[in-house]
Length: 245
Ligand code: PGA
Image (cartoon, rainbow, N blue to C red; front, side, top):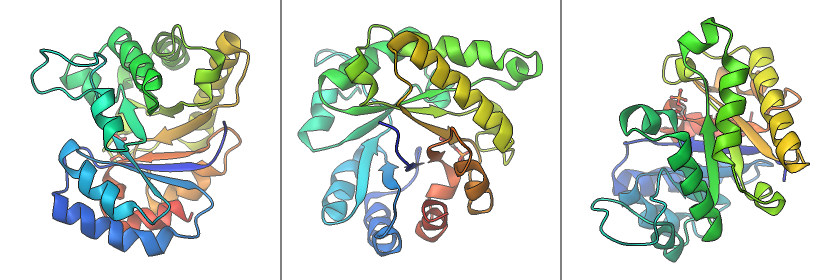
């Protein structure tokens, strides 16, 4: 379902005590937010973050998971394990996972299906490289990524996913896509989903150097439903300004 969502992605940052402080600081600042607030935290912070966020409107997500239920996958965490401690969301296919950990459209699809089957809501990431952008391939790349990531999903599944369009060249670089370009790309993703599933009622976020200064311009565009925020989600004050854009 289409709704306003602001999600933080802490990446490999924050110790448990910092996570607890963050939630305690953020909660009063976002308690009247009309957007859904999510923070996606490292595995070791999940439990503490969930406990601290219990009586607040802050939702908690993980940043990755394995697609198998259990087994000999040293170092991995399954959807069941996340679900068992009440994790609600999980980022799937972030470009850093694709780049540094060899995730492919195929493993992204396996993870998305496993997450949904276990009742987790995946935040599915797609986005083009600078070279793909400069050679005019953005739309082709992101619509192919989304079609492959969502392969074999049902129409009902679509209401339980969030998509994040994150141009790789904009992540952590301080360079943001123009609001028009981001909106256009997201419109194309929406069209692709409509073509494949008969509905475009899906929440699609923009990610890549979102900050308090550009949040409003981006998030008030017709097709952008909110943001996936990396660096600027590490400070409660700063993140709350984005949430309350
Ligand atoms: P950034 O990261 O906001 O630091 O650019 C966004 C992301 O990687 O999700």
